[in-house]
Length: 293
Image 1 (cartoon, rainbow, N blue to C red):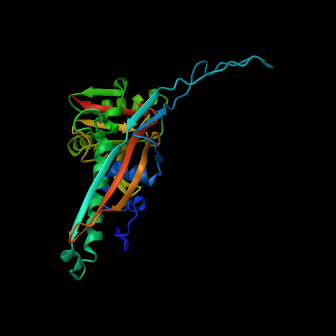
Image 2: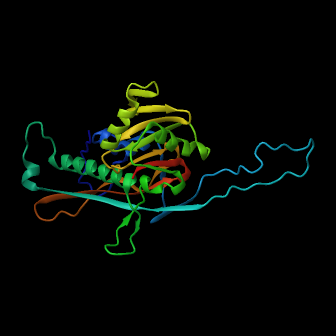
Image 3: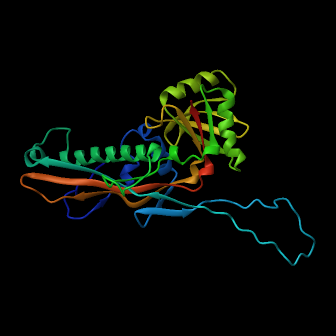
């Protein structure tokens, strides 16, 4: 539970540790997963730019003569990728009267309001990193919005069908394997599509019963190309299952979640929680998607 006994000091207070704990973890599955695994980084501008993570596979498996003195040099073809930093801000204002009233079990009402705003900020960040559409802030209303996970998928990693079935779900996972990415994956999916997937794999040996991963309740399927654990998300598009390697993702912060006091006006106490962040995708090859047509 969020607690602070010094919210009205004239300096910012980091809420980075608190944001991992507040709210229901199943309401923010992607953000909670990234934070729990420590997949965070720093940013230093309004746009975060990085080089794509990749390998050069030319001549893989080709040998050389004994005593070779002319090694062949290789370079990775690394595309330059970027995403904009999005600002999240939620304010709270409590009247002097409300703050002075002492209700048993209620505690400090201003601290409680700030805790609620932090939960809302966390939910907003979850929505943005899941399904956000890129806006660079150059047009009215000049708000920067990051590109979310669903919109990072490349066309060749998309499987389309009118209905999901066992084969096209496996084909979606194979898209990652074909790109040289294997292991354990996560699949972000909304409720209706998840119900259809459950029906496909019901009572099949390849279906993994519910269990917990980093506090999240998940179910999964085991394929030849890797195991997929499903993250049920309210923010996932109803017609998309997005499968990804979580180790290729990162939340990069220019400003980690923090509380900032605002100037007192009249008989009220005011403050805000604010953060500025973006989603880094080390390589779009690590994301595949099944889409209903």
